[in-house]
Image (cartoon, rainbow, N blue to C red; front, top):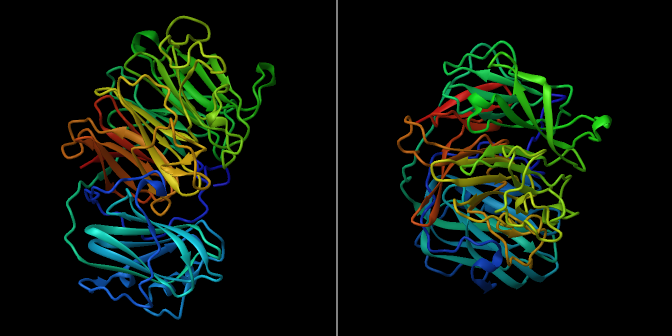
Amino acid sequence: MSTALVVLVAAACSAAVPSGLETTAVTPVASSQTIGPSATAGPTISLPDVGPASSLAAAAANIAPLARVTVLDQPDAARNAVDGNGGTQWTSGRVAPGWFALSYDQPYQVERIEMVVAQSPPGNTIHEIWLGNGPDLQFLTRLAGNTSDGQTLLAPVSPPQLVTRVLIRTSTSPSFVGWREVRVFGASAPQPPGASLKLTPFLTGGRIDHPTNITHAGDGSGRIFINQQEGRVWVVNANGERRSQPFLEIPERVGCCNERALLGLAFPPGYAQKRYFYVSYTSTARPDLRIALGDDVISRFRLAADADAGNPRSEEIILVIPQASDAHHGGKMEFGRDGYLYVTVGDGGPGGGAEGRAQRTDNLQGKLLRIDVEAGQTPYAIPSSNPFVGRDGYRPEIWSLGLRNPWGMTIDLPTGNLYIADAGENEWEEIDVQRRGDAGGENYGWPRMEGRHCYPQEGCDMSGLTLPVTEYHHLEGCAEIGGAVARGSRYRQLQGWYLYGDFCSGRIWGLREEDGRWIVSVVGEPGFPISSMGRDEAGNLYVADYAHGAIYLIGE
């Protein structure tokens, strides 16, 4: 795939996704433990020394040897830390931060975790313990204090919890991150029920290489429209038949590939009568229009005489956003219930957020925009209710800020809730939700925070930030692509669930709010690189296989 998208959403993950990681459908265990943005979200406990071996009553067996072990560095030695031999050890070969994780094929009722230190020289260390029953890790405790080689640390789990994953994250250490032994004491527990997806091949009559977006026109036709990364839009009829000719073909204008692409497609309310639509793409160099290679472009195109064909010569450029690199473009668009166009824009990369563009209010990078492209003004109007209208130093198009690479964005029209899948940097992928009626102006934290965690180190100022409703670690994948809310008649268990996937691990999760608490469940593992999830007009959901150009209809 010389021109293919290697990691389209640019998670910049430094660790490969572990193979064979279990993704059966499970629901995270309900817990009174705070799901925290950083170590400050839970109790900080001075590091206890319980001697060379635990003297506590062993009501449960050590299940650590049963786990699959994944680490950031030196994976070949990782099982030395669960072999029952304190004379062996795993050492990462690098200074903090670092992590050590265990995952299980079934949930266990865990009551405590013990860790035998591998450390030279002695000194101050800080460790976070996270537990999960499914993808959403829950903060357990923070251990801080002076430690030395061979010391045994204790993290009680009280009350015991159902666990399928344990993450030990070391943020501070005077030596390389490492452990002589990790012990997890627990007992078998029954698997909780969960929904499970069925994928049915939908596309007939050929493939669509490198699909990047799936949407519909809202015109009653039952068709779906699929973006191809290189600069084409294809129409697929309700029976799965792909039209022989593209709906729109502009590869000479789309700077491709890697993270550059034909990204977004949006149809205005009343499209069947208006006969025009909007696209977003990363541009080729167009000096006559003062557009540089990789700049983000939002344009309006009109239909040709054929209702299944857009006229490439009709382009009206609405907005050009300069970008500094080929990374982090975002580029998804949808019309809200208010009739305004919402557009995600990435921070421009290339990584680390070093220039802080997502927090700067004088540019449009790393933002969610809200503009009125249907007001009849050239090139667009600014809604008077946008949160920063009239404020010095703020671009009035900004609806919210603090985003890294918001590859997925969707608006659930029945509720008006807006979902953003913001791809992470080193460790965490996040889902942000804005409820209907919110006035905008949210700051989602990047690059001050990655997910619910201070970035790049502890001690950040979290005041004024809106934290994600859920996140997952790079143990579960490395680049989330967002999705849509299941509303079709074929969904019973998943009705009203927001489904989202990961490009690297090929997993699909479901997210739903119940009594003020967000519930997350793994609902499927297609195994292919997911590059887009979208819906048709009836609310049926589809998922795109980037590697093979296939489109699947999602069912239960």
